Image 1 (tube, rainbow, N blue to C red):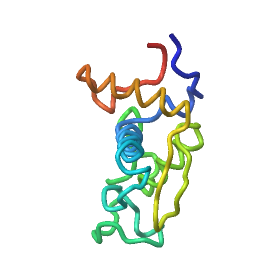
Image 2: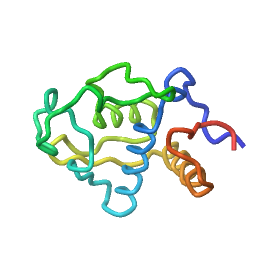
Image 3: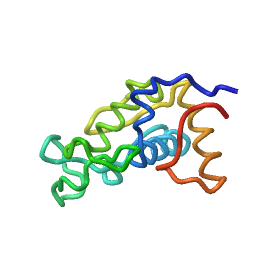
Length: 132
């Protein structure tokens, strides 16, 4: 069964940071009406008008792709959420000050596959959207 025909050039590059951010967003949708706690996200404070953890930003915290590389050392979880929205998995319904998201129908299907992958002992870094 095909769970979702993704743009392979983009989603295939999603690594542990994208999928763990997606899993966090899904949990917030289930438990907290989609409201995200900004303190639980990697936020690059040098490019966002918000303060998350007060630690600043280190280039080594940039989002890792499937191959473990950091192509953009400024890419944070807000960027991951934007990428997830572009791929049709979530929809932003809040703001940076009061962040909130909802899952799309595609997002619900992918979230179920991700939960199954994790329940079977998989890691976020090895999750792939595809046939199941």
